[in-house]
Structure formats: C-alpha cells, structure tokens
Image: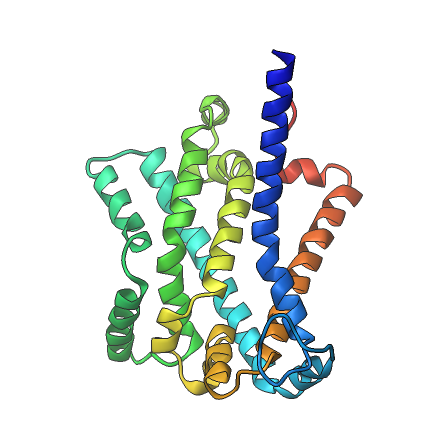
Length: 273
C-alpha cells in the first residue's frame, strides 16, 4: 500500500512537472527570441543582442496603443462589473418568471463568434455615430465579458447564507443598505476574480476592436498585428517579454501589498472559520 502511494506520488510529480514545462517553454522561447541577433524571429537564435529592445523604444505607436488597451479594458470591466453584479442580484436573490431565460440571454455572448459580434456592433454603433472610438469598444467589450461576471458573481450569490440579510431587514435596513453593507462585501472576492478574468480577456480582444476602431485609436494587439505584416524581426518578441515581466511585477506587488497590510489579505480571501 505504501509502495503504491509512492508510485502514485511520483507519477503525479512527473505529470505536474511535464505540464509546467509545457506552459513555460513558449515563454522561454519568446524570451530567447527577443535577444536574438538575427533580423528575423527564429529559435534557437544565432547570437544575442539587445538591439530589439532599443528598437522597441522607437516604436511610439506601441505605447499609445497600450494606453488605449488599458482605457478600453478598464472601462469595459467596470461597466461589466456594475451591470453583471446587479443582474446577478436580480436573478438570484429576487427570482421572477423568465429569470432563467434572461440569464441564458445574458450569457449568450460567451458562445457567439466574436467576429459576428464585432460586425453587429459596427452596424449598430455606426447608426449611433459612436463607431471608431474607444467608447464604442468599451460598450462592445462590456457585453462580451458580461457572462464572466454574471456567472461567477451569480454562483457566489447562490452560496451566500441569507441569515445576515434577514437580520438586517428585521432591524429595519432598506434593500439598498442591505446590498451595500451586507451583500456587496461578501461578493468582493468573486468580483475581483471575475474582473481579473474579464480584464485579461478584453486586453487581448482583437475581432471587435479591429472592426470598431480608427487608426488613431488602435489597441496594442492590433498594432502588433499590423507591425508583423510589415516586419518579421524580434521586436514583437521584445514587446511580449515586456508584457510578461509587467504582469509578473504587478502580481508580485499585489501579493506584497496583501501581506504587508494587516487584515487586507483576509479582505480579499475567505475568512478562516
């Protein structure tokens, strides 16, 4: 029995290690490609140089596109969090006839082809005279990521015990006060999780952005795509490395902030019983 347990543990260790290598290998290839001395992206590189990072500094369109991506993603996430949380509260806590059908309708953008949604938004926003700018993209991407918020927050709401809300109602609290003081604090982790997933998804969104935006409002994925149409040098790999390092830095900073402030880490996570 003990030997069987050791074999199982060894097999699981090998499996986890293989998965980790599989996930890290593309990132390592990008990192080595970004410092390759050749004029084209190839692996393994023939030599090593930092000239592509110097070339990256001259590509000012990437910085402008990065700012546009941040604005569009942040706006879409905020709009999706507000509308998705309110919709989840209405469907889960105040069920009404047709609530299940309405929930399925809200979740439908998750399974619809993104190019179809992009064309539909182009037609609609052109009629509304808001196509071409970031405002239209924010509205379109908010609808696309709304299913993430509705599903995750709705699941968290379904698992909440109503005893606290009932106690507050017995003490005379209004429904809005119960929502802001009882329900919303209990949803903070679900909102953080759904907001993070939605932000990552919208930041890499290409289909709708390519159809809706003008040249002066292009986001970073579109600018990278346009650059690759003209040049095949490792500058794109350098941009990818910068994004990876930035994401890791934000994650580590977030963890350090949680650990350095007493009680803040428990605010985001579940409390110990």
